[in-house]
Image 1 (cartoon, rainbow, N blue to C red):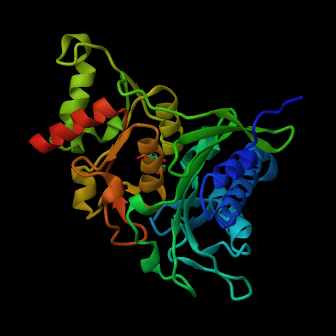
Image 2: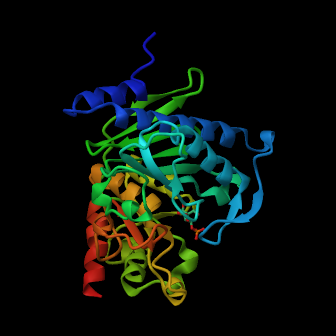
Image 3: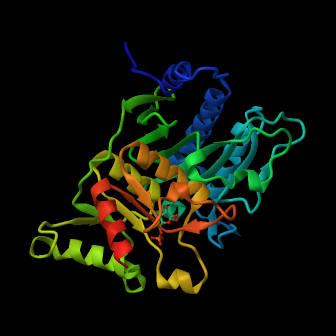
Amino acid sequence: MDHGTTITQFIAQEQRQIPGATGDFTALLNDIITACKMISNQVNHGALVGALGSADSENVQGETQKKLDILSNEMFIQSTEWSGHVAGLASEEMDDIYMIPEEYPRGKYLLTFDPLDGSSNIDVNVSVGTIFSVLRRDEAGDATEGDFLQPGTKQVAAGYALYGPSSMMVLTTGRGVNGFTLDQNIGEFILTHPDMKIPADTAEFAINASNGRFWEAPVKRYVDECLAGTEGPRGKDFNMRWIASMVAEVHRILTRGGVFMYPMDSKMAAKGLGGKLRLLYEANPMSFIVEQAGGMSITGKQRIMEMDPGSLHQRVPVILGSRNEIERLQSYHSEG
Ligand code: P6P
């Protein structure tokens, strides 16, 4: 029986397209996939294995860590630190970069990840995900924090795992976007969504509307026009979604189009924050995927992937999705 193309086969076929490829990159991607399978198993068993609830600790963001946040982080470390493919790791759940232990060789890649994004949804059984990004580092020896501070245009791969009604992985290596569904019976991700493309137009947007009174004028204008529907300047009705799980929102947009906004607002500005979402392991990998699927991803005024990171956990505003809508939002920001 033909079980379809596995993600392992797909990645190997991709490697053959790259002259001089050594297999390191392929092996790293396979280690990341293993970590996501392990996390999927823990998430799917949730309460049955006592994995729900808080860990009575906070991450560098000051957010309460769930037990699964810490477990997922450890699974990523265990799956990648030994391989000799990475020179260092950076995670939402760790204040500083993770130095590869002395006993393991260093590799030429850097891995940044949010091991369990949207984990506030875990205890209420709503979809959560893992986001990762791969950068290159050609120097020898131990990685430094500065090695990670590369613009998103330098990413060599990005992807996410979505732990929803089914577990999926979506991956780009700069040659389009492909989606894979986990076949629990054989423990493999199978290619089910080849060459994913985001429709240029949409009638659906996602934003946390409870922050409405803090939004900047261009975002307020855009949302008000959507809400005005057929009687308003857009001349059509819009639908709204908010899952509070970026991976689920981005996957919906990849599947049927849409707009996702976590914009800058006066509340965050008053706290000196650059935004809600983190540049290195949320905004950049999702921007790489969205752009590879024909969409756009901006802060409001600037292309996210062209930002020069100033720090490991830097936060940025994120407005991404269907190209024609993001261009409209960009024009509203340019008008001020
Ligand atoms: P809010 C999850 O914590 C996250 O980082 C994203 O996945 C999600 O889009 C956003 O924050 C949700 O934020 O303010 O609605 O809880």
